[in-house]
Image (tube, rainbow over all chains, first blue to last red):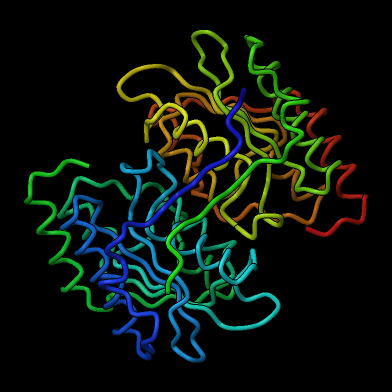
Length: 185
Length: 185
C-alpha cells in the first residue's frame, strides 16, 4: 500500500511566543515576531527560522511557522511554507488574497529557493525580511540555494512588494548564536 | 488559538494507477506513471500534474503525488512536493539519499519555481521530466514562475542529474486536453 497522506505539526510552545489576540501593526512588530519564533525554535533544538502571516488591514496574526525539517522528516517544512500552508487552510483559500484582502509574510531571514518559489503562488501581497541570505550563509552552515538573479523584481512584477533589513541585526544575533552552538542541521 | 498543524491527502483513486508491487525499471516507465497520474488527476477535476519517487536500485515506487492545491486549499501542494513529502515521511528521512541510496523524482512536467527549489533540499539524485515548462505555458493557463537562468546547471552542481523530454508528446497530450477543457485552475 502506498501512503496517501502527510501530517505536519508545529511545536507546542508556539502559544508562548505568538499572541493570537494581539494586533501586529508595524513591519518591525511583524518581523520581530518571526525573529522571536526563530530564537525559540533554535532554543528548542529546531532550525533557527521563523515566519508569520498577517492580515495587513487589521494587523491580525493568521498563522505562524518554524522550521520543522528534522522533527517531521520533511525537507519542505520550512518556517515560511508551514506558515503559508496553515494560513491557507485556516482561511480555506489556496491564494490568500483571492478574492480579496492584503496579506503579509514576515520572515526572520530571506526565503531559500524553495520558499521563494512558494511565495509566488501563495497569494501574499508583501514579503518582509529580517536577515539577508548572505547573513544566513555567513553565520550558519545553511545553503540558501539558487535564485533568479532579479529575485526581487520577479516578485514585484507579480505584485508582491519586498522590504528587507527589518531588525536585521536582531535576526543576525539569533543566527550567530545558532552558528556557534555547534549544532549541525 | 492559532492552528498548529496541516494535513494533506492524496485522492482515493491513486491505487488504481500506481502499483506498489511493480518494479519501474526505465525512465519511460517512471515518467509514464507520472503522466498517468496527471491524466487521472485532470479527469477527476484536479490539476493536470503527477509525480513519483523511486528507489533507483530496485525500481521500487516509494511515493506518488498529484496536484492538490484547490481541494486542500494549499498552494504548496503540487504533485512534486506531495510526492517528496510523503516519500520522506515514509522513509523517516528529511533527505532521501542520506545516509545512503539513490532516489529518482519523475514528473509529468518540469517543476515550477517552488518545486524546483524543493528538489534542491529533497535528497533526490535524479530528476526526470516529461513536458517542458514552455509546453505547460503554451497549452494551459499555468504560470511556471521565475527560475535561475541556469536551472539545470544549478541542480547538477548539487549532484542532481536532469533528463527531460521523456515521453514529452504523451505529457503534452494530457496538458492539451486540460487546456481545451475550459477548466480554470
